[in-house]
Length: 96
Image 1 (spheres, helix red, strand yellow):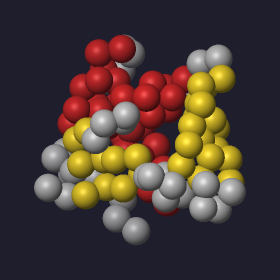
Image 2 (cartoon, rainbow, N blue to C red):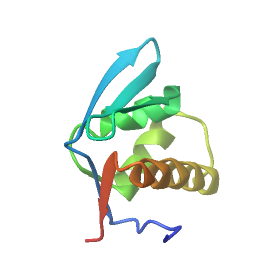
Image 3 (cartoon, helix red, strand yellow):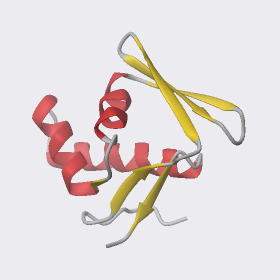
Image 4 (cartoon, one colour):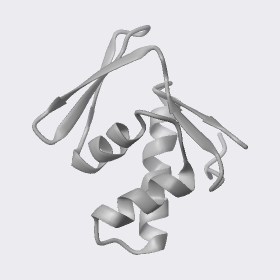
């Protein structure tokens, strides 16, 4: 599995999922596998931002605008989350 995501890669939610906010977290259901996933407040913030497809750069800048985090930590954390979401087939990542 590729462990890096290009800054211009396009990230999009899978069509085979539904999600709902619960307090400051997000519950995501993979409708094909019938498996439920829970995202913490930062993951939820990113998930809601992905209501329309975004590039990796856009997501990083969006997170940095809301949270006090340095560039390296932000990129690593966002990338880790997105790779997990991709592994669970909740998003697609397309290189542009």
